[in-house]
Image 1 (spheres, rainbow, N blue to C red):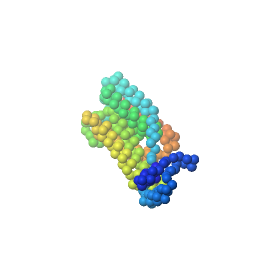
Image 2: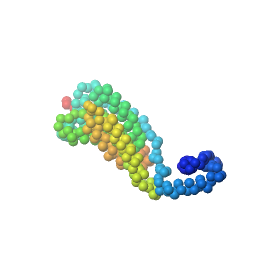
Image 3: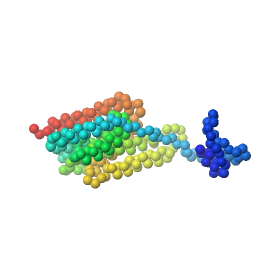
Image 4: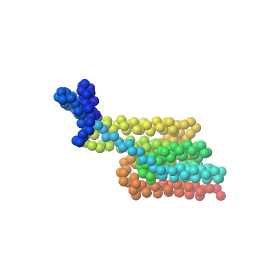
Length: 280
């Protein structure tokens, strides 16, 4: 294809055809010398120009195990509707967190104020969490998202140590976006002799900017906990970079299973502590 464009620029009309030996160009016999000279000049001029670059995998994996997370937040919403005081002892309350009730950083990510709040986080979260779990492995993806959601609440707690209450999985959802944007870092690794950093810089910056723009579009809505969104996104970025370097076999092996177990513990333990502190 490259050579055919070179010849066309020199008023030589080639025909691209496939033969038993592979793809080839057919040109008029009287143009043979001029064609060889043009191709030789092209190869000399572009000897160090990275025309052919390795394209990163475009295969996108979606992990439908993310549906389990959706069912869980629906379950916790149902529980909160059964008891009027359910949210009060599990919501993220900055003052109570400062007094040692750290589990609220996790339990608050399972709560929602109303059906509209639940539906928006469930739909967007299903897509982003499914992509994160497909990219990093089921266990690593969901654990990273859970920690990013708690990280968003930590960010709000540090910025608002006074009276501040919040709830919702939006920090976790933005954390998934940060996890996905963090896939750009492995592009910087040398992959072959003669590798040049500038050949990877543009796609890496482009992907990172795409993640940032999506965060601006989805995470800065008026009337939402923007600080929790921002903290979740940053935590997702911080966690996604080391996760991006995990070898492919480990993403579905024992370490992945261990990550899933830790995620389960981060559901059971915070809620167990929350239930223990219910006023009698």
